[in-house]
Length: 377
Image (cartoon, rainbow, N blue to C red; front, side, top):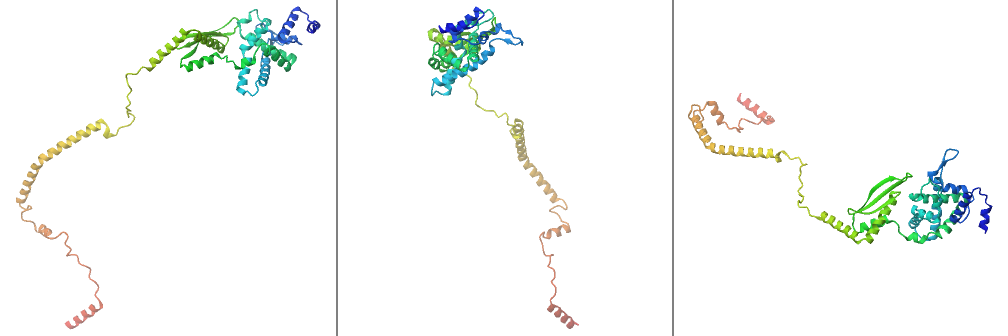
């Protein structure tokens, strides 16, 4: 009754604003004070207009503000709810609560998507529209009521009625990570193949990815980001692996065929000899030097043989020449010249001509010589 009296006291010029007040009360649990903030939060960029200063008017600025406020509020709630948990666990839990998929589902469950003003297109074509509007709504609540109002909104309307924080914290929703873990444990090859990339009627990017396992096409995912499309493709692939025994048998058969081909022996065994082509051979080690050395050796052998065979002839000729010289006049055995005979008679090492220097006469010798000369006279 009190709530009805409050809305009756609000001066609303249009019936449409009354309907907006009632809808926002159902979503937030309280009436707005400044309705313009909430109108702006529900204005998609496709219907944005320009203000008096020429700037575009839409919910993107409120979305930015609401994203920051939402991180702070949810971080505060998670910190107080999970006492003693480590920083990594708290960060992971907060990211699950504020991720785009969670906010999209909240906006749909709360009826917020029906209030979004867009350019005549259904909001369902763009999975970002609901989540963006939810963040803009939080930004509008912060500007209208302050931080404590945002905290009460998240605790009483979201976590108490729509989300079980404990289930979200301990539930793994990363299908891509699960698929990668399964393929690594079973040593199965897996890859993501981009099938299509385009833009829809609102110029929003659309990606279509397909999972390929052991060369076979598996799940396909379509989303407004690469991460979202790969997550959906991984989820569908995991579902096929669990529900279709024929598919998983085909995967392991393809793996067996691939590993068999990889394990086939190679007939041509590589040579282990290491060629020393990088070493410069010396002159004696080169083939030309070896040939020259062998030729030189052969020539020396032939010369030695010739010398041995001709040596008796040379000796005989030398003997005859020596005999002729001896028989000739003035030869070695004939009459020798006087000077040659004297030279031969004299020994080469005869020291008889070499005498010691005469020593000086002593005083006694001088006296004796004088006396001898006197007597002689």
